[in-house]
Image 1 (tube, rainbow, N blue to C red):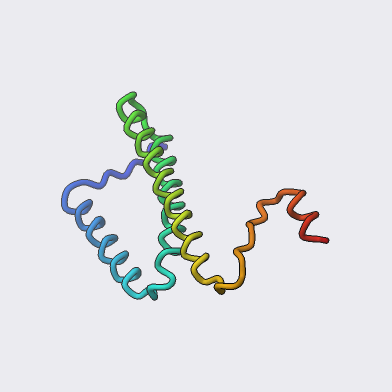
Image 2 (image 1 turned 45 degrees about the horizontal axis):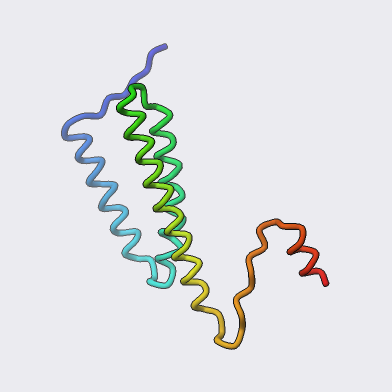
Length: 114
């Protein structure tokens, strides 16, 4: 069974404008303090979408553009997570040192147990 949907012309512009408006309304209702973590998470989703598009690329030109998009998307996601980390560090009290993140290391877990 061959099933294919082609979206062109006015319908494509309509869907794009509807998605843009919906995003603008949703982000507009997010409190300022939650905006950076939300954008960090959306950067992650952006990376998944770019990888999915790269898997559908069939020509060398499409694959090259997709690879460049993956590199730029990875930089965007890493920058978003770095900004979120810095923002969360601002909420530490001034006399309290920031706790190092435990990324599953056995040394850190053993040191924490003492």
